[in-house]
Image (cartoon, rainbow, N blue to C red):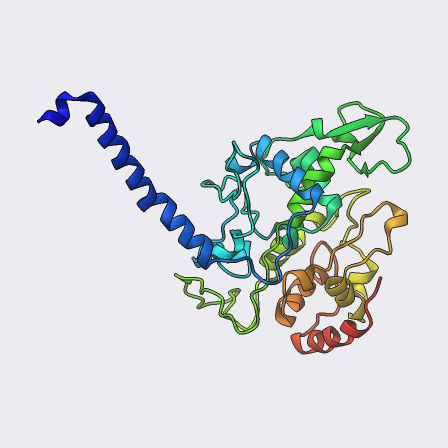
Length: 335
């Protein structure tokens, strides 16, 4: 038992054992993963602004409530078009020598997963309002507000990004809310979070443990649930009551576009986005239908919900009609 009586041999043996175990358990598997996983061909690296935004995301503790991993279970389908794979994170690198915060997968979803939030919520204006005070756009939100990312200016300078905040949330301030450089960087990072399309011929992993889709109002039925689809794709801006947000997002209640029996313009806006009301103070609408890969059936369900809610009483549309209009607006986008 000389080993236990000689501290040099004892600690030397322990050190060698630890080093060998580290190589076997940590280093070799990491090298294997690095050599066998590469970034997807269509993936885009973070811009300098988005990279700074990632640092702000970390510094403000966003990872404590938000994940960035779409699991392969059916309940995660709302967060992305497919489950996450190793290649989604292959392009992530350390922040610096001391901090290994390359991937921000997270372990808790107090708030929604952000893997594909750049597609799910691509409005810069919405993200800025949400950061200033989440309850403006999501009344039930428990997310903290980040007012220190904004300034109140009586006379904004040329080039300042003005955020349209309802008066009741300004706490007596009479100036304009202006986004700081840090706010724009954080939003740039959030908008960069998009799932990369898999290469042609690559099979996407399946979502497991799918729920029984028997009965009405499910994805497996002929009539999709327009309320649920509206909630997932439109409500964050246009609100549950269809009244939008004054000065930021236009109302759908009583909207001429929604009430028009000719559905082409409405389909065009959903598929191609719209920027025709910027002069009224409303930000541009992103192409929600295209980014979220909505089908004709899903779009018709959303439109029929909007056409028949909040006092609206317009002619309903059919999936067949919407499919034809989707083909038309692909060649003649409305700006």
